[in-house]
Length: 264
Image 1 (cartoon, rainbow, N blue to C red):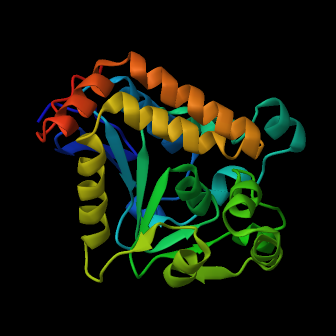
Image 2 (cartoon, rainbow, N blue to C red):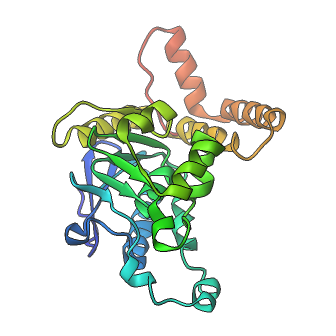
């Protein structure tokens, strides 16, 4: 275990080979997302992204709350000029520029900014206790960290409209049925985190270059038309033929042995 940097609002560790873990740690505030917390989160994610020893990242909260929303106390007295000129919430989306896959392990409340944070991750695993929602309408605003956009991509216009305009929560089961989460794991404390770490280990056992290329290609599906996306995918696929891992992976398959990745 390497010594991890100490933070005030998050914990970082390496629970398995190639896996970095970030745990939101504001228990009294149910992991409410403040600017100082996001500054630390961005710093930790960037450190894992820059570390060749980490090939997949898991992000989690507590059993009671992944993150129960943004910190309203921090926001309530801000004026338009301050939030507009200060690019308030813009730094939240830095998470989406990370090249390595991020898996959210969600238990309990993932509301408002917490739901948006989960949606910024690449894969979401949910505990049966997970509760999602964008309740901002109830405090006189709308989602500001991507909720209206990422939910619409995931579940379509009509459902997103209903959730955003009523502020109602939705369950882990609904999230799975609608495609918001990959799957709901079994019941029990710590199960969702255990499953997320195991999933991260599987991803970390693959060629890091191929994994990052795969993430990039899937994300491109949301930015391009189908034809542009298919062309983009082919180009990324072709480019992997310049890697040692492609030669090793295909040779290992032909020779019926396990590949040894050099991540190069």
